[in-house]
Amino acid sequence: MTLAGELERARPEFEAGDWSTALRRWMDIDPAELRPDDLGRLGVAAYLGGHDQTALDALHHAFAAELDNANVPAAVRCAFWMAMIATMAGDPVVGQGWTARANRLLADHDADVVERGYIEIVRMYAHIDAARWPQAFDCARAVAETGHRHHDPDLVAVGIASQGRLILEGGRVPEGLALFDEAMTRVAAGEVSAVFAGQVYCTMIEGCQRVLDVGRAATWTAALTRWCDRQPGLVPFTGQCAVHRGQMCTLSGAFRDAIAEFDAALARYLDTSASAAGLAFAERGEVYRILGDLDNAELSFSQAGAHGYDPQPALARLWLARGRAQAAAGAAQRLLLESTEPVLRARILPGAVEILLATGAVAQSRPLAAELAEIGDRFGCVALQAKAAFASGTVELADDDPAGALPYLRKARQQWMELHCPYEAARCQAAIGRGLLALSDSDSARAELAAAGRIFDALGARPDAEAVADLLGPDAHPAGLSDREVEVLRLVATGRSNGQIAETLTLSEKTVSRHLSNIFAKLDVNTRTAATAYAYEHGLM
Image (cartoon, rainbow, N blue to C red; front, side, top):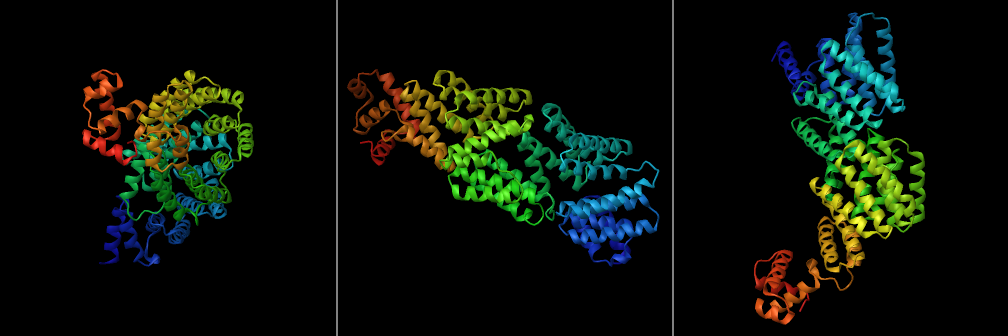
C-alpha cells in the first residue's frame, strides 16, 4: 500500500480508538515522512502500547516541527504529552522540564487556547505531589472550566474527577462521590479518550478505596477491567487495574487470587513507579497476614517501606500477631497523634481500636470507636459503618458488656454480608460467638463459632480459624453441632426411631424432628444413613 494509503487508514483508526492498529501502520513509515500531527498521534499511540521511548521520540519530532510552523498550541500539546509520559515513567525531572517549556510558550501566546487546560493538569499533579491541596483544587477547577469553554470532554472529565477526589480527601465525601458519578457518566458514554478515561477510572477507584465505598469500587473496578480487556495491547493502567482487582479479591475473601493480582501489578510497577509498587507490596502483606504467613507479610511490608510507602497500621497488626503488643500499641498511638484528616483517620481507627483493646486500653478505645462511627455516618459508606459497628461491639466485649456488644456485632455482620465480604462477616460472627459465651448461651455460641470457623477454614485464614478452635475447646463438636444434637445423632446412628429417641431423651417427637432437621442442615446430608456415616467418620460414636 502507498504511504498516502497507510496514512489515510491510520488516522481514522486512531480517532476511533483502534490505536494499536494505527501504531503498527505509523511505525512502518519513516518519521521524516510523517506530518507533525501524525507524529503526535504516533506518540500517544506508542505510549498506550507501552513504547515510552518511541512515544517521546515521536513527540519530540512533532514538537520541533510545530515550532518551525509557528503552531504554538500544537507544540504545547506535544510538550504536555512528553511531560506526562516522562513523569509516569518515573522521570519527574524531565517532566518538569517540558512543563516549564510549555509554560514559557504559553506566556508569549495571548490566545485562550485549550492547551492551557492540559498544562493545568500537569500543575495539578505537581501540587498534589507536594500536598498543596488548595492549589491543586484550583488547578482541577481550571481544567474543568477550560474543558467546558472549549467543549473538550477529556478536560471536563479529568477536572471533575480530580475535584471530586480532592473534596473527598478533605472529608466532604458525599460531595466528592457525586462528582465521581458525574465524571463517570462521560467515561461510560465513550466521550473520553483512552488515556484520560484510564486516569479518571483510577482516580475514582482509588478515592472509593480510601473511604471504603466498596460498592462503587467494585462496580468501577469491573468496568476498568472490561475497558482494559477491550484493548489487548494496552500497557498503561493495567498495573493499577491489577491492584484494584487485588483489593476487591481481598474483600471478597479470594486471598490467593488477590496475591496473584498484586504480583501482576508489581511486575508492571517495579521499574516505573516506586509509590505504586509500595502500595501493591503493602496490600499483599496484609493478605499474607490474614493467611497467617507472617514471614512473607513482614517481607512485603518491608518492601513497601523500601518503595516509599508506609504500611501502617497493617504492619502494627502484624506486630500484634507476632506477640509484640507494646510495639503495635506504640505505632497506633503515634498514628493517632499524627493523623488529623478524617479520611486518613477512618483508615487508621479500626486497626488502632483492635490493637489498643489487645493491650487492655479499653477506656482509650471507646472514644476512638465513637469517632469512627461518627465518620462512618458522615461519609455514608456502608463498609466504614460496618467497621465502626464492629469496633463498638468489640469495645463493649472488652468492657464486660456482651449484651451491649451483640447489637453492634450483628449489625456489622449483616452489613458485611450485604457487601459480599465473607472474611469480615466471619470476624463479626466469631465475636458474636464470644459474646454468647460470655452470656452462658453455650449452644448458640458454639453454633456461631463453628460457622465462623468453617468460613475461616474455607478462606485459608488460619490465625482466625485457630482462634475460633481455641474458643470452642477440645470438646467442640464438628460442623457446629450442639451437645443435644450430638446426643440425637448418636441415637440415630444406633437405629432408633424419632419416637424412641424422644422417649430416651425425654423430649417430644416434634423437638426430636427439629433437632434432626438442624443436624441434616449442618452436615449437609438428606438421609439418616448419611448422618450415621458422618457420625462414625468424625468419631462421634
